[in-house]
Length: 244
Image 1 (cartoon, rainbow, N blue to C red):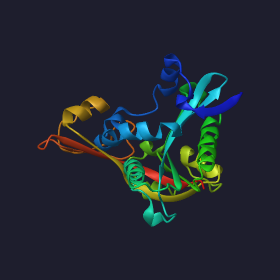
Image 2 (cartoon, rainbow, N blue to C red):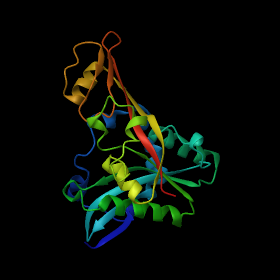
Image 3 (cartoon, rainbow, N blue to C red):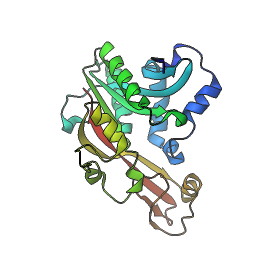
């Protein structure tokens, strides 16, 4: 492979290529987070240059993006998760602060190219981009890929599961650790997604006939349904890791 990295918006992209790259990989409910919707427009406008694409020749094979924020390096000062990272990036910008931290919030590998080491190459490119911008720290709220198999297990316990060789049992966490990243802390409420019962039935393809807790497809934790209030609430857990 002849891999290169460049800003996603450095030049026009073929729509068909982008559709192939971003086809699948995320559950539908992730796209219905109201707090993300409040922030994402300004995030894209202000920090669109922090979105990178990894190319094999002219074919986009991976992409990821980050936001700049201020963090003092202590676990106690970490953002609460994905959404809080968006809010803190905008707060730093509005305050005129100089960000010292790159928070990598998403990474996507082409569905046909998974398992070829492209995720690590993309993460390395994002870390290099942080360095060129003078940001001394790189952190990520990781969405563990196998956590959906264990939705009843608290994220604090799941993140501590390891293989006999000492590496994380979760393959996405393992990719980060193999690159030298340090697992810092759980983010049990990285995103909180609320919708009506009908919304959740549409997003999950499940019937939700009574109030209670449900295991949902691709959910990392349970969905809590209140039929009387006509609401379903899901808290998406992530794991904070630090690359630099």
